[in-house]
Length: 116
Image (cartoon, one colour):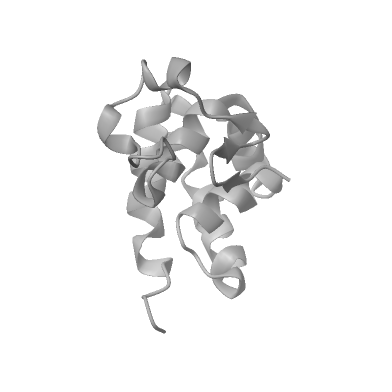
């Protein structure tokens, strides 16, 4: 299953070579991706696979990005249904930044609140 833990994302170690093409503010002093930028990084690294999962309304890449967006497990089916309704809009977006922005906007009402 694709995941982001520590300095690894989907089995790839994030190194300084990758950091050259991403804003330096995305990283901690130790070179790890900050939590708030993990959805952006995940979508960038897994764009094609995520697009395929969005078309199906399910899949491991969609589940992983949903977890990074902090959507609780019990709300994921409802969120996936919403994403499938918005698939025509998402499919027209050809860059990862636009898709990430749309996912973040759509996930807002589903996100877990800290301490809840």
